[in-house]
Length: 380
Image 1 (tube, one colour):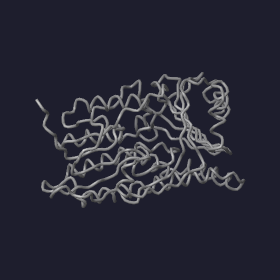
Image 2: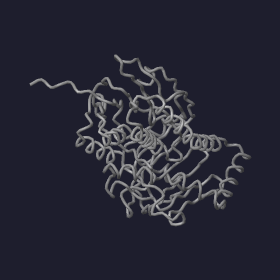
Image 3: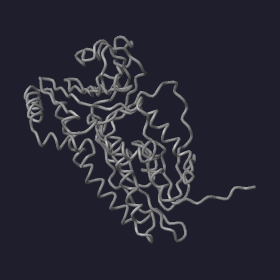
Image 4: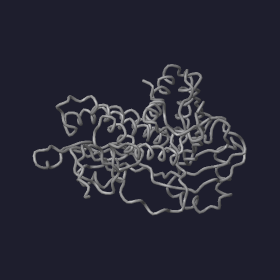
């Protein structure tokens, strides 16, 4: 028997972490959701070495959707140590903040698998390979979104002179649930704890000048590990590469508008809205990129959930409220990450002295440091 054509309230283009999270949120309101995954990419044969630092707000959102990874794939960060290049240092401690963890370092493949499983068992969500007509189209395709351009949205990009290199390491010493970050003369290095409380493996994100990238990627694994040992001042002893090396350019970017009307089909109004990396990019030095994207999903889902019964999901008044709220929330983080990147990119002596003086002052700032920590944790 021929299958009847299904109609959808919302079409989400992009089945990454933000897209799947939003689909699950909307399905709870009995909205019919088409989740466009597109054709499966050809396998590169390489393991996925990405890991994200997720805050409490993101954890609570994913737990509510039964999509939080198990403890082996979500390591609690008990403290964070940030070192400058002339003795400046800042330390954040979960106990001092009155919380169990500052953040959790989550394996991307494990999180994606949990979300995919939840979507598979949600009857209100249908995963498709091509877009379909719907009252509202949500663009969650990431920074290189093609749909964003098709809808006439300008993406204002400020490229940094840096690329990120990501990989995994096995360390001689256990990480002790400490996230470590070094602001170095030639880049920013982060070690993020993995494999649970007793683990001795870390995810690496190393932001370096783009001209250094080809040489670093071409190094033998042992030599690359030696470079990381030197950059990290052997904080975790001898290091051994435990994954592939991936690299991508860094940028700050924001769409000029996040929502708008589409040509109506018949008498039905149609609109679009952006979320996640399709709407905004920030430097990874603060580890907030995915937290911001998940906050987009939570805000959009909340507004659609609370809308008046007579309002369509395509109502531009609602969508513009979402845009205003999220742009306002993003502004401080964008300014902070861009300012830090610019400050540590300067190698002149006075700039080095200024930033390290600032780090030492911030370490002893009391209420300011407490406020910044709570903001990063998603506690307001």
